[in-house]
Image (cartoon, rainbow, N blue to C red; front, side, top):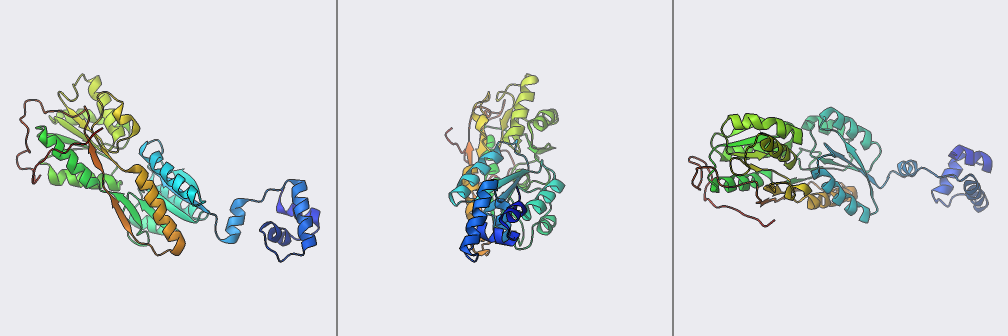
Length: 343
């Protein structure tokens, strides 16, 4: 049933039906009661989206992520959704599948349907993002810094986390290290790569990706370079690396130490348990919603929030074979300590 069916049966205009069902009191009470009675008889259900658009607000926000299969993003989205629900907002989630062009299409599509957007680790170029987001639409970037008008952002200090990993591995005597790099379009990868190149002498950089299969495929290149430690862009890549090392009968951490990033739920349950950098995923989601809520209120917030990660040391990292502990020669590690964190 449509609004036209209700109007025809009640003998009124569609505009009159709309005003009655939207709770406006400008319609004669007799006509209003007739419209309501006919609506019940026809079991007409007005579209919440259409009503919201008519009022200029849908109480719905859009969230776009690059890969819902990556356990990092569902944790962020869950916290965000719960926080938004407390404020009586619904959340629509879309997955760009690590495709920048698909991400831009999703932004343009959702921008016409929602009150605000949260872009989780967007992959598109800054200029493309600015063009894609509808002018005036409150938008928050999560884990990505973007210039105006997308100036509200919540990011994790990936460089701080990477420094903790590198210091930990140096304390274990490692001298030759590989970084299995993530997507070139990833803001987090750029920060992590910058930290590795600035803080470790002559690192081996292997262009990898963000999935376990990428980590599995990249291990031989790292081993061919004679590394004793592998740091991975994220935990999914690290799980793939562990699987390939196991297939090659290379002992972890006896021959090669492996560290990841994110601390996903399975990191503590693989063998050996994965040393990783724990990112405050739930806080990332909550703070993203809080900033978007502020922008929905007055539209002026341009705050950037940076959250601190923490190193979680588990069984996948150990002493480098045949190397005494200490900072690698020539490494700009500054005052040297071995950080540790409880499981």
